[in-house]
Image 1 (tube, rainbow over the protein chains, first blue to last red):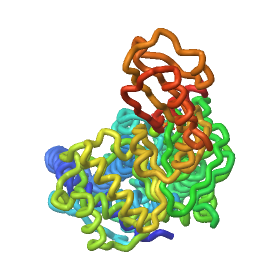
Image 2: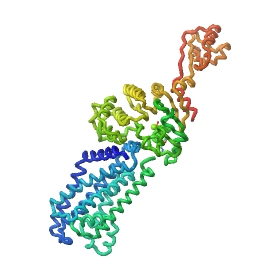
Image 3: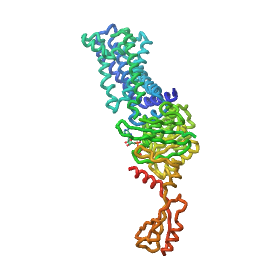
Image 4: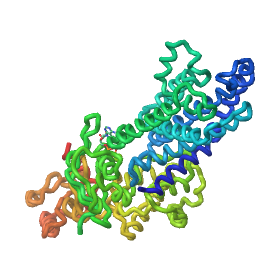
Length: 253
Length: 308
Ligand SMILES: Nc1ncnc2c1ncn2[C@@H]1O[C@H](COP(=O)(O)OP(=O)(O)OP(=O)(O)O)[C@@H](O)[C@H]1O
Ligand SMILES: [Mg+2]
């Protein structure tokens, strides 16, 4: 294992975040604050409690997940897409590193960034609404597993994407509907039965539900099912990544 | 001694179906400087990219210091340095950071003193905190070299290191290559400047259409293929070559003022003295004589031209 290489890639990526601090940290904080002002304070005060939790507090875990997913997919995909785009990938390909080091470096950095921003959002949320965390360990577990799996997912998108449009396809077009329809802003029990069934095909539902359970012990699906879903997703992403590296898919001619 | 790089029957067909390498065999000896010449699209970059791990070969084997580039890639890539043809650099990074990054990527512990020395050697030290996109093309080329030297490779591939580089920098580059050779680094460089190969290489390889046409010691190549020409300026013009001079195969030029004689410089007898006495026997007065050796460029043009 080439630890120096992992360190180099990781810190190189973290340095890039520092250069783009405004975009990486400030903008999600502002966006989330706006959500809390609108949904938490303005509209939320007129909304009923959901399963014994104030509406503002109810939506907090979903909003944190929304940010975490976007950050991880965005950072994970951009980190590897950019060297592909500029051609500096030649250096990674000609270095004495295997896919394992490359993935740990890039995905590790993307997940770290996601976790930092996610934590900031959590702190921001606590300024607007009352948040309690009933199962801190489970909360951290969901937090970290989600960050790692979606950074890995982003990494795969970065390898697959041929242009910026494809690169932005997931964060802009696919993640928001999944998050909005995955019970971030409501309990799916509020939906008609047909849409409840449909919602169960949305992987984000399991994430948000499990994450919210670790806060308030309320859930749309059992937290065990949520955890298993996240682990399965991670496993699938790992296998696809392994395959990409074995075949050199889209990385080597 | 076993060659440090050994390429056997290497082939490459790109996904487009284009065959860029058609069974290349090449041995590179430790410590030598090999210049690869070939027209655009000959397959130079493809070959280098395969050895470095950027392109996957379609067939054949490559070993570096006895290790296979595919199965033992960690060992081979750790000792190979590459300065790519394209000026690909991360625009937003600083000179120092990008060089340090390369070193780490190759598994070496940080060594600021070494990086400082490399940057000073390449006259980049005063630019160490400059962001790469603010550098000129020649400086970027040097940054790429600094990156490749940062982990002290034993084999260095320079893909057109002097393309778009001014004369003084080119001289600097040649000196750098000399220093590296003195330190025992094996260097493979591609170039379109034939005088460059003539100046610094020990051996010269010519590649065209994905095939190695020849690999020879520079001196042997020049002697073997290098023909010499003697030009005789006549005091008074003649209209035809006298019959007595027919065996020499002369050509008449410059409206009868000039006779050109071609001879093999490596041959036992060049025939110059007998030609000179034959000239005076024919009553031709000689005003001036000059000889000229065909350059590597002529050799190259001839070889590549023949392949068409
Ligand atoms: N990714 C690719 N896909 C398809 N064909 C390619 C690819 N890369 C190179 N080629 C083709 O392979 C051939 C050899 O290219 P290569 O870059 O090795 O040439 P070269 O000798 O380095 O030329 P130059 O002196 O212009 O740098 C060219 O005809 C080129 O068009
Ligand atoms: Mg080339």
